[in-house]
Length: 168
Image (cartoon, rainbow, N blue to C red; front, side, top):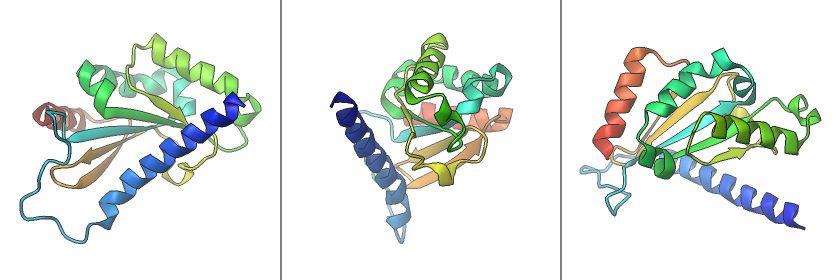
């Protein structure tokens, strides 16, 4: 019974994320003066990681991701950053949902990452999967979405961090 409620909550969150991602595609033209969509002093940027499960199991594979994530301000991680773990259908499902969830929790806790992570057991984000961990940067002031693949170059990392700091 509790597992079904958890699945329903996850489905609702995934639908919400898809709606947020789709929202950027519905605007035909950019407003003349973009206004901040998020108020109350919150950042106008949101980061969504599409995390490849294999990268969690491979220390060198996750090095760039961890380096970047840990360089984000703690408040920004907690309030403006989300992660979605994706994996190849059929492969990791043999491990079982509980084992995958435990490995993800261990990775997050062991590396002191402080943003919520959702596991895509239903493979809803399979079309976004590129075999590498990715970063989606949603900017509400310019109504844009940018995508970066890990490992990030030094120039990309610097530009993203500068944009994040300016949004605070």
